[in-house]
Length: 174
Image (cartoon, rainbow, N blue to C red; front, side):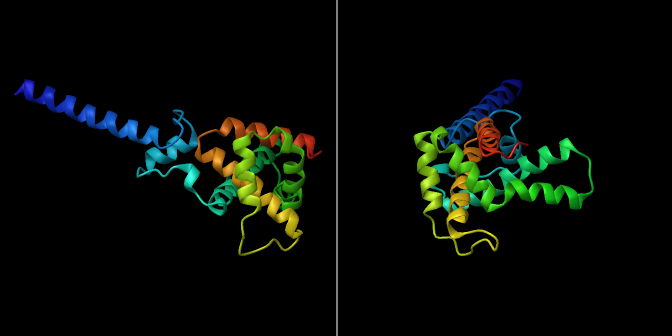
């Protein structure tokens, strides 16, 4: 009986290893402790290859990632009323600010990032920002697509590097 339990445990281990290999083959290996890894562990399921996502889907998640990073920095810098935090944050998350950031970063993008950016910028969004030009809105969409692509590739280090460098180069010091 004990031998049967050992064999069953080995079989389960093999199935788990196979599932882990399948998941890692679908995209970049997930770093233990990364936000993405934690989310996918809590909500397991089939993982799609990030290269197959539409540019607007990438921009959708990239917008949230960028917003979370900016809000985190703003809150960590000063414990203020929520209304003040919001007004500070708007200066960084507006389409105009993101357009300045991406213009400053263009030479820093890898070929892969430039490709994702172009796909996002050239997408046909169904809405436009109220307080931004169409050009700025599309540049911001491209930037958000890059951030979404990097996040879903579990490359938050690169996301943070681009946001930090971009805000500095654009004169939007955080």
